[in-house]
Image 1 (cartoon, rainbow, N blue to C red):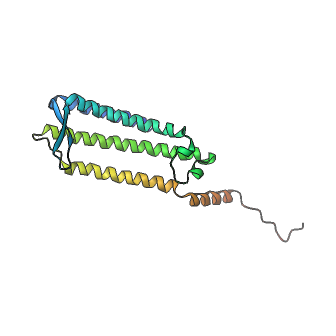
Image 2: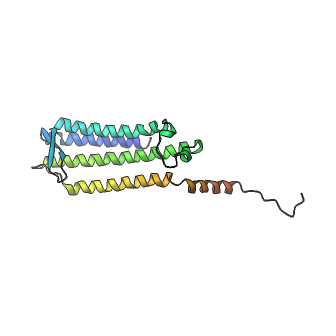
Length: 189
């Protein structure tokens, strides 16, 4: 939390600077939605468009900051997690929820960055005659974001889907710290 909260504030500050730079250059009514072919198919007043933008970013920052606290206070049976009983056992719960919280916040930063880039593309399209969204630019942002999302989900499954391997690792570490004493057959009883 301590590391990502300043990043959330920094990203929102950058978005506010972005709004200040483009506000007067945008038309009074802007294209707010584009079809799959990049053609405009939705419009709204500039104030509303930029208000939605900043509210969306703030909402995402709040969501990704608060959600880990909500999950930590949620009963275990309501948490959908592979091998839930193992990972949410009292001796592993704090570490497991800490991993979920840190990865969620990282995903939140990535999501806000993706939204900022997407809105920048919409702003740029509104500054051009014909207001057409560049699909090449959009795909250049979407594909890495989706790749990051796949890696994120993979990290969650890699971490929480390996109950048996984790148990063996913990047992072998425990045995290495506390080796079993085998009685010497030559000693007197």
